[in-house]
Length: 152
Length: 152
Image (cartoon, rainbow over all chains, first blue to last red; front, side, top):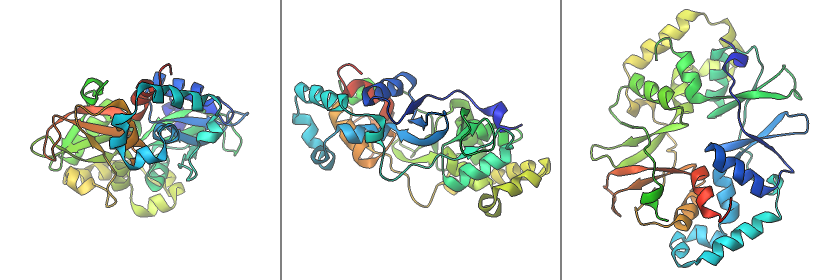
C-alpha cells in the first residue's frame, strides 16, 4: 500500500487566512492542528491548536493560570477583538513544528520511518515527488500503525 | 463553563497494557496518542502514536527511510513479533510528553492558560483537585478554542 491510497482529506489554511477563520476551521474539525499551504496548495507547516491558545492568552496569565479565574467575560471579548486583526502568519510558532512530506508512491514502511524519525503525528502527502507539488491529504500515525502491522 | 462539562471520553491504557493492545486501541480511535493511567485511573502521561512507530521501526531505517523500500513483508511480521513481548511501559518516550491535569471546576480560561503554557494539544480532567483522582475525560485544544471565544 502506498501513500496516495492512505491519504485522507485534512483541513488547510494559508498564511494570509484571517486568524478568526483558522480558529473556526480548528473548532469545526477537532484536529490537533491545521496544515498551512502556499498558493500552490503545497504544505508548508503545521499550525498547532495549542499555538492559537498561546496567542490568545496573555503571557502573564499563562505564567499564573489561577489569574484566569478572576478575569471577567469582557476579557474573552477582548481576546476575540485582538484576533480580528491577525492572520495565520502572525499565529505561527517561532519554533516550526515539523510536517514531513511524502510522495504518492512512498510505501507504508517508508512513511512510518519518516514519522518515527521526525516524531510527527502527521505526514502530508503531495501529488508528486517535488518541493512544490500540491497537497493530496494527510496520514496520521494512528492510521499508519494499522497498516504497518499485519494484524494490529 | 467548567472542565467537567467540557471533558469527553478519551482512550486510556496502563503501563502494563501489552504493546499490541495499545496499538489496537490507537488504530481504533485515530487519536494522536493515548492517555496512560495508573491503577487508580489517575492520568500519568501521554503515549504518542509516533512513539509507537519509533519502537517498531529500527533506528537504521529511521536514519535512512529509503531503506524501508527494500524491506520485504517478512520484516513487518518481525516487527509485530517484537511488539508481542512488550508493554506500554517499554514504549514510553524518555522525554515525557506533558499532559496537564485540571480539576473539574477549572474554568475555560484557566484550562486555556494551562494548555497554552504547556503547548499541549490535550488536558486531562480528573474527578477532584488531587494528585491521585481518577480521570473523567479529556479536552482538546481545538474543542477549547470554540469555548474561549464568544463567536468562533
